Amino acid sequence: METPLPHVVIIGGGISGLSTALAFQEACQQVGRSIDCTVIDSQQQWGGKILTHHVQGLIIEGGPDSFLSIKPWARDLCEQLGLSHQLMNTNEEHNRTFCFTRGKLREIPQGLVSFIPTRVSSLFFSGLISWGGIFRMGADWFIPPLRQPDYDESLASFFCRRVGQEAFDRLIEPLVAGIYAGDARELSLKATFPRFRELEQKYGGLIKGVLAQRSKPKSSPSGSKSSMFVTLRGGLGTLIDALIQRVESNGADLRLGQQVSDLQMTNTTSNGYNVVLQNGEMLKADRVVLATPAYVSSKLMKPHHEFLSNLLGQIPYASTATVSLAYRAEDVPKSVQGFGFVIPRKEGKSLIAATWTSLKWPNRTQPNQTLVRCYVGGAGREAVLDYDDGALVNYVRGELSAIVGMTQAPIYTKVFRWERSMPQYTCGHLDRLQQIRECEQDFNGLYLTGAAYEGIGIPDCIREGTRIGKELAESFG
Image (cartoon, one colour):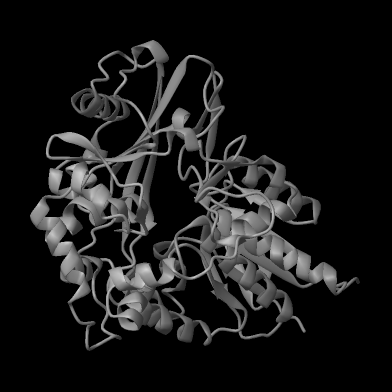
């Protein structure tokens, strides 16, 4: 009887799980090793939150619409998959972003560099922050660094201490909410933006640190210049499609729409895991990767390691939704300009941000159409998600009418709901993460990856998935 090949099962078919599968396959191929690989996902489509909807000439992103170009891992993966020619920069002609505060849209200064404007003069005329608030920001120059550099301070505490309450409320908080859909009073500075603590400790303050970094010569990467955010011409779903095609052509067994109901562990070093599906099928595996949300991994691990299960269960998640609306261009007022706007929590709205998608990216609509995507919900603002789709669209339409005067009916709407989709790196996250990694070592052949741990962005998930995939291949000797 022929001896079966070693078998790896990856649970979770989002960008983390698929990146893990590809990196594992490529590493095995390089050394001529044959190992079976199965990827399982409970949903009806691959990619997790990366979901592109094509309809009536519109390209609508259900989840993220782009990724950071300065983090190389997503671009590298696109190159590996032959997608470099599809990478697309933002439309620099419309490169303006606004903040809705005190009853009107106010432009966020172009000199804004990672939340700290280096051209303070542009703040004077924006109306975004009062003169008193601007002078309070300048006090950052004189405020000494925190004496406890290892203290896990919240984002709100850090920025209020350095640049003042008003700058935090009107400038920092809405930008943070747009990224994490979280409450900055609870999010950990060390786990989300450690660079700011480093600037404070190295240079004595944020303004001093930013100015010092601006004075350093910058080495530009080879090739064409990229905007801060990039996407793919056909939408980010193109990346998922290419990943699935490559992983499947490399021999993976892809199981879509199948729920894992139980993870059993044996005491043998060979086929040490039984992955039990909801339909009763059992897959024997030598290694298992949990590329699932932390609360899903917590449930699977509870019978085997209650402490690890509790740690995973302590990672909170926020729920959000995106509401996309397409309009006839003639129905859109001239006040619609730039890439979009953010809304501070202080304004008391459930709308976090809006993107003028057809201005930010080319070729997202048919000619003479405008596409807008609104982002609602998030930590502390999730009550709006109790609305049905029709009511959610009406809520967003009411906000767009009040903010920019968009009163005409859209020609198409689409709602995407993301329940418990955004992991929150609250204070203590890095300590929890260290304990999780230590507990992980108690198991032979079990790996945890995904947005809950080392970064929520697409490049971060690809980086970690790739690392796990290579480590997984090396574990077979």
